[in-house]
Image (cartoon, rainbow, N blue to C red; front, side):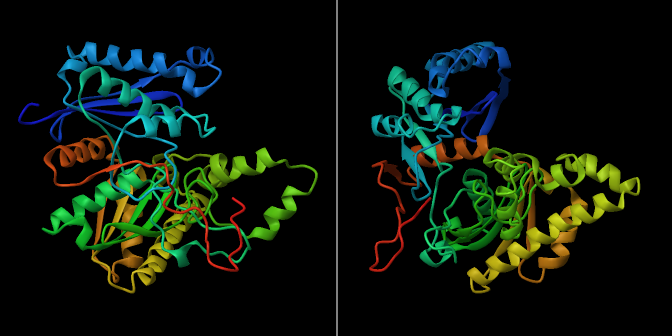
Length: 375
């Protein structure tokens, strides 16, 4: 292996494949290869896209005069590993067997099989870094008042932990030694309390809790939604669509583009201003709640995701929560950088590489009298 390792990072999405190559933590190239709908339509299931995505990656490397032989390590976004602690896992047969037999039909499940294929072909290591199903919640954070419904962790883990690591470094400290609250504000919105390197509480971005987001409804009063479900006009799909795709800013003002909303506000659109302020208000309120989770011992508040590039939006959150702790904005997302940085830590031995067992970090409460999880 070269003195400074060359790392290929990968994130397969529903309509694109993100690919990047780093020398250490310095980016050599980044690409987001879009896949035409007619090409994807040829595949019945996401797993059937394996060869198609593999060729996409190799072709992109070739356009930069590179091949797998130039790569020292592989690191990727690996969906469907199930709940685990955060950190770095070696990608092996067990990981690949698990992610391809969960019933999930999303290209994110291809991350591990593709990287493992490359690792076997080259004899180089492959890693899953802070995988998206990471679940480190403390027990009391899981309980809800609806028997059998428990809170789980579905959060922008990779970017959340990356910006927390960066913030800790700016303080001359380690991530494991600080307490921070991180709000990722993008198409989805997640706010999490990080205590000494673990995300001990968060909203659930997948199941629809927390502040509303550019295209997700977030927390809403339950009874009106229940009545909608049984009014004879709405079916499960239409309601879930508002929860996860067309709610939030999209449903309220007709766009999920924060820049467009900013232009409308400048032009005097009062409704757009109220709605946009409300999203920031809900983010600030969530941050305040997680300050209580951390018992007030907060070393910093971090804002990240695309909306965190909006200085006016950030300033309004700072106005509400700046009394809790210093606020730092890292606008955008750093997922590919996070994957590369994780591989660097693994290779250097500064972070332990774990072996994946398939055993979940949480699979329900086992105490006498506990009500089973109904999912």
